[in-house]
Structures are given as structure tokens and as C-alpha cells.
Image 1 (cartoon, one colour):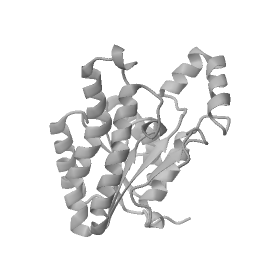
Image 2 (tube, helix red, strand yellow):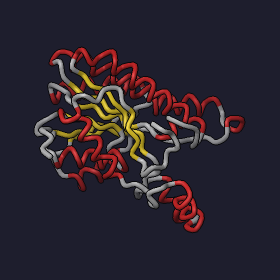
Image 3 (cartoon, helix red, strand yellow):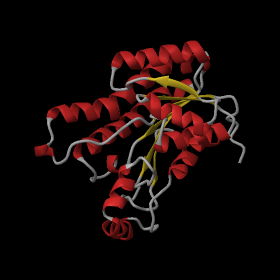
Image 4 (cartoon, rainbow, N blue to C red):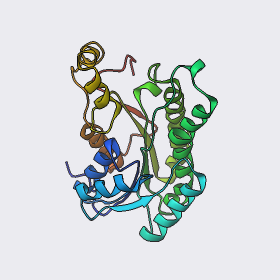
Length: 253
């Protein structure tokens, strides 16, 4: 399917590894102009070696308000426009509520939620000028139902809610906002890889019991949904949260 993404300006946060890197690769394969933003310069340089010299790099701590503002200011100075923003940066911390400090709750919300809210607010004026744009938030099935660590669950749930709210607000300006909710995805730098190495039998039992498809998902399977959602082929998808989970979610929708 021709997605007509050639030359589109795409910014992927947390794009130096895992799902973010796969999303960057998928857009590159469609001929888009792709930039990745991340905190760790070394990881970004490695990603560029794998993805190719056409990728632009922006180092930023996305938990920091000033860094977010500088990122978008610099990006717009360099590129002149933005067609697609992928809010992918995120992470998991803490444990049970009673055992998790308030600092970790604040940290999770800053990284998983406020970074996406702030970056979206910063780029919306540019998208409104051209009456076009796509924002895709990478959330989790554990933002739609219970599961995962409480800080992660809370922040991803908030991001799904924000997605729908913003989508309804800006669709009249030609901007589509949606979210992708991955299930358990296996990749080299992720928690599932580490847990599989530490307890292969236990994780195999988890997969058999919890994932109807009988395997972990791949980063490419998430990335394929992202490029579709960003394209005009998905023009009537607005404010949706799409599970990419091999049936893992227990929800009916």
C-alpha cells in the first residue's frame, strides 16, 4: 500500500532504541524525513548507524520543560515544518503503591505524560498553520486496563485520555491525534528481554497463559501501525486507542 509519506517531516521521541527506533525505520522506508530525539547521545549515534545517515538527531531530556521547548524550537529552525509527531518516550519505575515514593510518581508522569502533552502543545500551532498534521502517542494496554506498575499504568491511562481530548479539539484544524497501545513487546533493550534471560521457563509460561497469539509482539508490528495512522489512509481515525497486542488485552474494545 502506498502511504504517501515521502518527504514528510517526522519527529520520533525516544527514537534511539526499541519501539521508537523501529518507528523511525518504518517512516524512513516510506521516504519520510525522520528525526529522533532522546537523552542518550551514544544510543542515538548507534541508532543512526543502523538507520542511515539520513536521520537527524536531537539530544534532549524530555522530562525537562526547557529541553522540550529547545527541541521544538531547534527542530522548526532546521526543518521549517512538522507533519508527524510520535510521542514515544517513556519508561517504567517503582513497584506497589505503598512501596513507591512520590518522587517516582512525579517522574513517571513527567516522562510518560507531561512530555507528550507539552510537545503536542508546542507543535500544534505549526500544524494549524497548514491545516494538517498527525500526532501519535505510544501508550500501553495497561493504560486501558489494570496491569503493570502503578506509575506506568496511571501515566499511560492519562495519556490515552489526553489523546481523545486533544483529538476532538484539533480535528477541525486538520490535525489527527491517535494512540497505539502495545501489549508485551520483545526487543533487545526492553524489560521482557531481560526477564526472559533471567527466567525463561516463567516467561514462556506467561506468554502461553496471557497472550492468545502465543508469542511476544515485535517492534516492527507496532511501527507498521504508526505509519498507517500517520497516513491519509487513516484519515477517518480520530481519537482512537488501537491495541497492538496479539489479543493480550482483556477488554472488549
